[in-house]
Structures are given as structure tokens and as C-alpha cells.
Length: 96
Image (cartoon, rainbow, N blue to C red; front, top):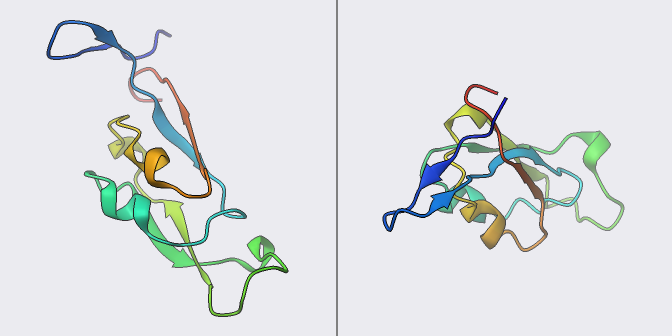
């Protein structure tokens, strides 16, 4: 299946890359991706015990998750504001 191809206002083709994964082990729960996302793709939840790192304080027990992956528009804003590079994006066909 071919990935979604869009057009910019100027008529150039553009391939959006949608968020497909968020690394909970590196996420610090800062909420920047949540705040910048125009489609409510993310949700802040309590960190799993498996995701805890020895370097983290007990105070930092929240982490972002992908709550509504199918609402992602592929703008990439989340990746640009993430200080830890937690997001993975891929070009996708419709509905996948």
C-alpha cells in the first residue's frame, strides 16, 4: 500500500509521517507533546514499574502514551518539542 501523499499550499507534494511509537523509558512526562498536539493524540498516565529507570526520582511517576494514534495528522510537532526524542514517526497508508 502506498503512503498518504498530501500537497502543500504551494502545490508541492508532502508525505506526512505519523507517530507510531513513544519510548516510555526515555519519556520524562514533561507534557510538551501533549500541549503542542492539535488532535489530542497523547495522554499522561502513571508510569509502569517496568519503565522505571534507576536514575529517576520517585516524584517523576508520569509518562506520556499514545491514546489516539488514528487522530494523528502527521505534523511532527511532538517530535520537534520533545527534549528526549521519544517519538517514532513513519509514513503510513490510510487506516494503518
